[in-house]
Length: 125
Image (cartoon, rainbow, N blue to C red; front, side):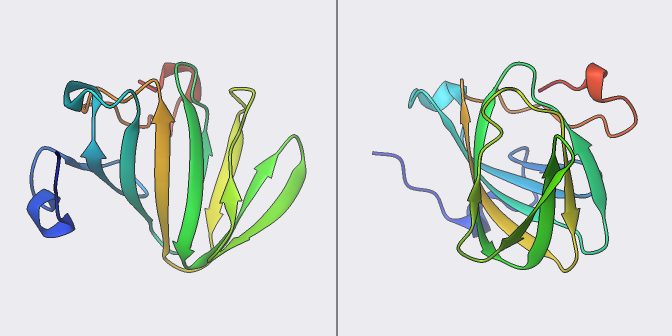
């Protein structure tokens, strides 16, 4: 059994700054579960152009308010909203307030991946 607390992850190698927030990585590839699980904080007032070329991701918002824009369509994201770019979609994530998302990645993250917000095509994801 794997048991981790957020307090065990903060300020360790599993607590990854990605430019517009923090990705706290509870499960990684080396944990052998077949997916990654993160607790992600998105800083208020930020806009992130994201594109995962190697992973599918589902995000469940547990707090905060923002929006995701995919293919020119803007979708509000608040607590209780899940979104999943299911075609390796380039998308904007905008945080109106600080947002907290629980995210699942398949295949799992190795652990050192991070967003390149200046060059989406060069992103490690």
